[in-house]
Image 1 (tube, protein in one colour):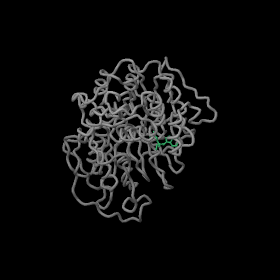
Image 2 (cartoon, protein in one colour; image 1 turned 90 degrees about the horizontal axis):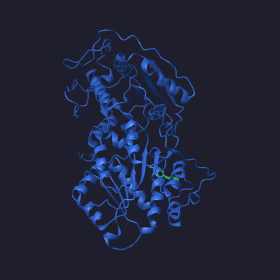
Image 3 (tube, helix red, strand yellow; image 1 turned 90 degrees about the vertical axis):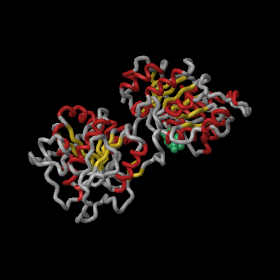
Image 4 (cartoon, protein in one colour; image 1 turned 135 degrees about the horizontal axis):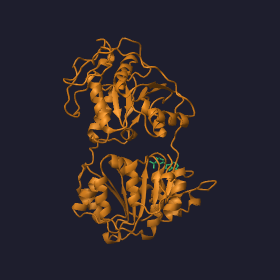
Length: 481
Ligand code: AMP
């Protein structure tokens, strides 16, 4: 992704530091010591690019994913900028909130605050974290005592603002972390309310893994003469992944997907779509076709997402239909199949999607269903991968065949699914525990028959598979609007 072409007033940050070191970035001894304590030998690319301009109090628009070291990239210079005000006074008035960091989830908020403590251990600066789903009283106490660095999820921060337990009138630095995810989760109104109570003169840092239009709009209204930073994604696709492209018209995709799931005995498949409403619809259609499916995206609560993942992990769910952003928070290992029901519009997202399979020395299949309108996105992907992906031809799916469990009144596909043999394992019932978008009809309740064939290389009954990183027993942040 090229950011500079979309930001006319942007200055491209060119870090010409031949041998990067934290000391060469201008960090103070207390921070160098804390970094050395962590065993970091050299700064990551985003740290090399971000630390000097943040120290110069420039606004930043950073394209970087979690995992690139971006947290230290903004936290280290923030600590340095605040260090002159560090003090050990017990008076709350001596510890106003000077840096505010907003994150989409409580897990990320906790990690970010943890890094403030880790890197700030030799400085007398205070930090705390506030997020929803937990008792607000201890958070109020910490805020009343005074903190220089506040990490928050937007909804809970608004709760504190309403209860007047926090004063943001002295904020000098604002960070929006994972901005795309915050907007995807519907936090824009909350963010706007928070921005309205901040002092207008301040430094703004915005980080996002993707830059869709709404993130750009937010950035345009927020950032002044930003430095644009971009770090390359890890875009080397796993060697073990085999790619397959099915050129197919959009209306036939659903039947092909159901056919592939069954004919290839896919027991755990992550299916990507671009929009959350399509995730919802496709999961429901697959259920109607007798395939245990659910959707995972930001409109579902944290508890629902965790449940969906747990069911996927246990093999109760065959197909997990996800959007790119929702899938980013999941660490799913040893996944045998990834299906691109729709191609992403940025080729890097393809690499990110297929990085879900072909791990841990096991082969993986990345299957893409590509409509004629999507061919241009396929060309972009092939350009990035520097090779042409093999085409497969879709089988003749018998016209008129019906999905295994059609919903009453459900629209029938022109090329229906071949009726499922009773003994086939893919004809598992949909898990009944979910509150899917209404109306919802649970599929048949027969217990799944045992599969007669030899053990599948990715047989989930025998090995641990999907794990949710950063999930925890959390509820989703309550949404204020
Ligand atoms: P982040 O992208 O900020 O979530 O960081 C990802 C991981 O990289 C964290 O576990 C950090 O502790 C670690 N990390 C950050 N900077 C460095 C560095 N310069 N060298 C080694 N590890 C780092």
